[in-house]
Length: 132
Image 1 (cartoon, rainbow, N blue to C red):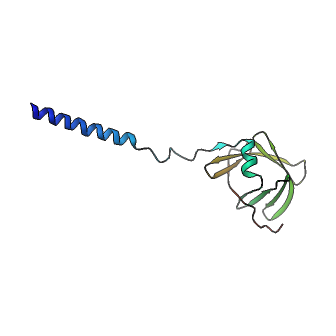
Image 2: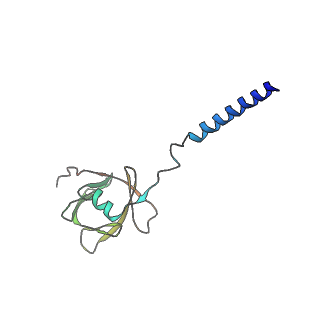
Image 3: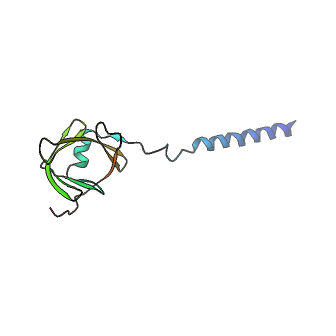
């Protein structure tokens, strides 16, 4: 009977240690990247003075309110402004106002346009020499 009790305690100890080990293991990531919408202040501090780019376009946001755009080989100069949580561009004319949200997951970024279900993965980096 003493032997059975010791065996039972040993089994309980092994079970408890196993449960503790399983409970202490955290999953590396819970599914796909979790993006969150950047605020106007975050956009101002992270994007202005930088360049947003992807293979087909680049946009350089200058601190003086100008934006230099290269899109499919064409160059435009316009103006940028932050409206709430959206970064807006007037280019090539003020009538051509386009606003977008910027979403972030760590150091990954997406542009999301109102009414468009497909986000654009982009890089935010220092200005590249584009021949301006």
